[in-house]
Length: 158
Image 1: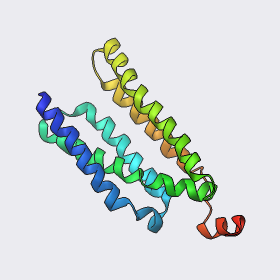
Image 2 (image 1 turned 90 degrees about the vertical axis):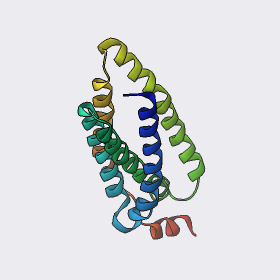
Image 3 (image 1 turned 90 degrees about the horizontal axis):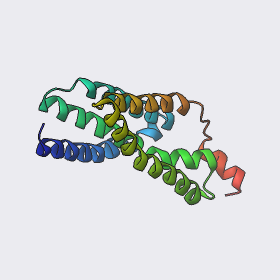
Image 4 (image 1 turned 120 degrees about the vertical axis):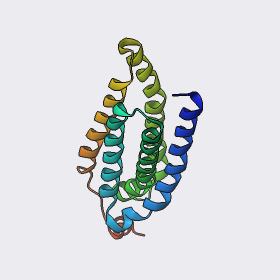
């Protein structure tokens, strides 16, 4: 596929990510933060595995749309999850530490994918490693116990 097609796919991911944030932004309050995160990341993992078999431009664009929307779906849930897990005090520091970890992963992921490509001559293993990491996160998300907002208000004297 051409660089122009790849650029279009990245653009679709970005637009779909925005749509996922808008559409699923308040879904965590209605259906449960853990559930929305797990569903979004689970769909992301499935999309990454399906990328192995993408052969046509329409398939690539469908992947980009699904992946972008699912990525956008879990991103707005993390500040709410953090607040409910730890309370409102120090939330800026906690989210800053979480984002630092995310940036380390975001910067090391492409390097690891490039190394895997150099060793194997394809990206299949990179997609599978990313999908496995997402699947592990889906399982771990259910171990996070969150407190209802009212409980934090009582604990903090607010």
